[in-house]
Amino acid sequence: MIYVGIDDTDSLEGGCTTYLSSKVIDELSDLSLIGEPRLVRLNPNVPWKTRGNGAIALTFKNNTSITDQEILDRILQIVKSESHPSSQPGVIVSRKKLPMNLYWKGVRTILSKDKIIKYIKETTFKGLRGGRGLIGAACAIAWDFTKSDTTYELLAYRKKNKWGTIRNISKSQVNIVSKFDGVFSCMDGDGKISMVPHSPCPVLWGLRGTKSDSLLKGLVHLGPEKAEKSLLFLTNQGSDDHLQEKSLSKLEDGICIKVRGKVHSTPYSIKGGHRFFDLIDDNNLTVTCAAYEPSGDFRTKVDKLIQGDDIIVCGSLSHETLNLEKFKVVRFENRYVKPPNPLCNKCHTRMHSTGKNSDYKCRICSTKLPKPAYKSVLPDLDTCWYEPPSSARRHLSKPAALMD
Image 1: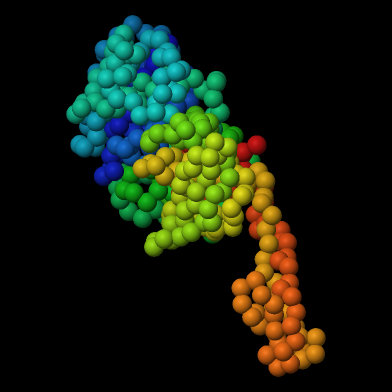
Image 2: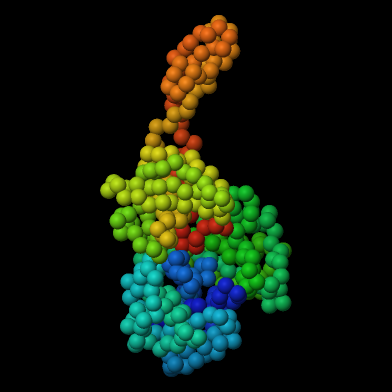
């Protein structure tokens, strides 16, 4: 078999690696593509990434006399013409599968190009304009989808004369498709469409799910703007592969973790609407957790936590702060509220406190009553996973609907 990896052909200013890969598939039509092309998301904390940090892997049958260098040269013609000028593309052609541990390094750590050269020295490869994309290209080839959770994404592409214009996708049709079996992350809870990008890239929409048949069915329904072409990818999206179960003693910037602890401080907000609280573990180590403004109503769930709640949090560490992706309460601390001031038995008016931890007194007849006990109340949360809306969610983050 012939394995091809491609990465870093786009940038924050434009371009699209998945669209470029569709042109590569067309160019290599004399080879036989095996299975779906693979869209492999890597560590979302990589500082030079575009939003999704996705690389592409393709597998072809080794049924021609074409050389690896000839395949590489044909791919490079497309990469040179289609990649964004500020990107650093990398292309790898290999006759053997790269080791799965390289994938785990790419999805959970920050790799340098120097660290992956030993893995690709027996392959045919080329990096352009710095060639940083060789990292993702190698990790994409290394992903063994038989040993990881997988989902699908059907990507639809626009006609070129439509690039940069407003996309015309009906919200009611998206709502219909979102109810197909296995489909997820189409819409936010407030009805906002999350499957349609806002950048001037070639993508019309991206439909994600666990069942490829449901996605292909959606292709017929979505519109009014119709795709020029579409491509179904097998992905590691929604796998949580980026998360590591680590203790707070082993935290370092750039990693994504899943950890259990207790809420150690009452959640508070700062200017901009960002929420923070401290988490403490069994070793009395703490970390500050954050839910930032783009996470929307997720912040109101954070507000409902209290000190002592036993929770599991998932997120990425940056500048010693854990940026929350989701959380689940395992055990609730007892919650109490102050009851209303008692009524005077004689005057039937509200009594007033005479001081902290003191009795209550009627201002009319001076009758005194002891301070009433705090009332126990149920938590305003459930023992389930809470997450930001899909438009603010990382591609790798497993949706709450798919969590055990």
